[in-house]
Image (tube, rainbow, N blue to C red):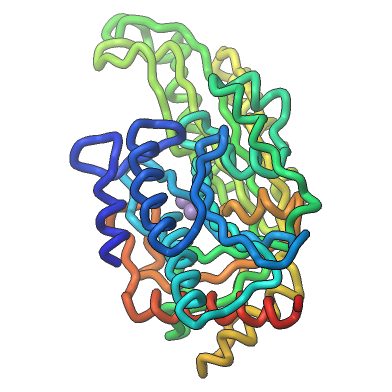
Amino acid sequence: MRRCDELGAISDERGRLTRTFASPAMRRANKLVGAWMREAGLQVREDAAFNLLGRWNSAQPGAKTFLLGSHLDTVRDAGKFDGPLGVLTAIAAVKTLRERGVKLPFNLEIVGFSDEEGVHYQTAYLGSRAFAGTLTAADLARIKEKQIVKTKRNRNEFLGYAEVHIEQGPVLEKNNLPVGVVTAIAGQSRLRMEFHGIAGHAGTVPMNLRHDALAGAAELVLAAENCGVTATVGKLEVESGASNVIPGRVSLTLDVRDQKDARRHAAIKALQTKAQTIAKRRGLKLIWQLVQQTAGVHCDKTLTQIFSKSIAQCGLEVMKLPSGAGHDAAALSAICPVAMLFIRCKGGISHNPAESVKAGDVRVAIEVLADFVQTLAKENS
Ligand code: GLV
Ligand code: MN
Ligand code: MN
């Protein structure tokens, strides 16, 4: 918890926590977490995508590698647990295992991914997709740091990936449980759109002769709210942005999620048709751009079962729940089986500085994760 506080103070912005891909704060965060990894006996390096890697090599020749981790980037004005908690609990679990003198038949590698939130380029999972080797030409065209493709790892090396994360929802709290196992991760689409109208004088242009880009965008925001799946307009930019000018141009981001990919696709199609209708009626030009989409992912049955056993071992009821949020595990599922453990958080609040977890729950998560790795070791030796 002290480490979460310390890491939470490393920010690109004064007075609030914002740490985005490849930023100066991220470089400082990697240095600090790297030192904690070293202290836990790990060999530390940073890859070409600024992912931080801490490795515990098995004594067994030709051993494969099991991955633990989460992300070290944050949203704007973030809480201090979304991401970092998964990396720090992994380091703590390694420390526990080493103190127990556990020998592993596989290498264990902890990864602090450099970009899960996608604040910098509006595309999620840059760090983990670079690692998995699934970046597309379109991704690379968008970003400055072309060297990140070099990060791609050999998928044959990996046995699996496990991620601890705050739940970011209220289910565990409602059920009075410190941890739970994740069954699936919702798919997500990120889009960007623009309405182009005609800027004009706020006092002279009659109301019925306007082509107000913001009024059109506002209709779309409300349509998104009622599109039948989880949808959010998180960013709106209005030009020229003066109180006495009719908005001539507006850009919006749209984030759409659902456990069912087909339902998400259908909702986006319906919203696009709606946006076209709005634009036509108001005499606006519409630009509609799909920035990124990630399919929903099922967690691996075997790994999930081991998590369940470890939770039961701690004397706790095993609760299974899906994730509405995206996670690096979704990106890693392209190259290996994945599993996730959720930690209860206060009020289900996240992406907010009020994010909060209990030390006792974190202790349980570390114990469960250590037991998970130990069981995995037994089953693989
Ligand atoms: C990450 O937190 C996401 O789900 O957007
Ligand atoms: Mn996260
Ligand atoms: Mn997040």
